[in-house]
Amino acid sequence: MEKIPSAITPPHPTNLPIITHLIATYKLWHEFLPHIPKDSRYTLGAKVDRSLANAAELLFIASYLERDRKAPYLQKANADLDLAKFFLQILWEVNALDNKKYVILSEKFAEVGRMLGGWIKGLEHKPPAHQREV
Image (cartoon, rainbow, N blue to C red; front, side, top):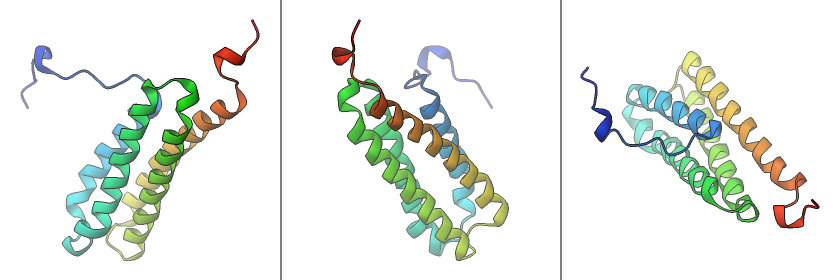
């Protein structure tokens, strides 16, 4: 495969580990998607895909917001990630996704979920900068 010159390579959206992990998880999911039977690929598969993309978008937006405006975006991203997990489980239950792929993706989703939960808890326990004493 030919390498794209760096002059036209788009910059990475952010260096936040959670976004890096979510993008890696999405790439893995995207590799598995063509192997899902068509009758599930365009229904449940599309829902997993859309939920992951929505979560990535919300995390990206939250990464640029002031601390006191992040929580609603993170909570919605968490809900989207939970939806992706839910639809992934249904794909597995209807045998549209094999055990190995399900386990690999579930672990990736759980890792992103833990990171997101930590970010949300960090916002809850630490007062905004303008309220902290110096």
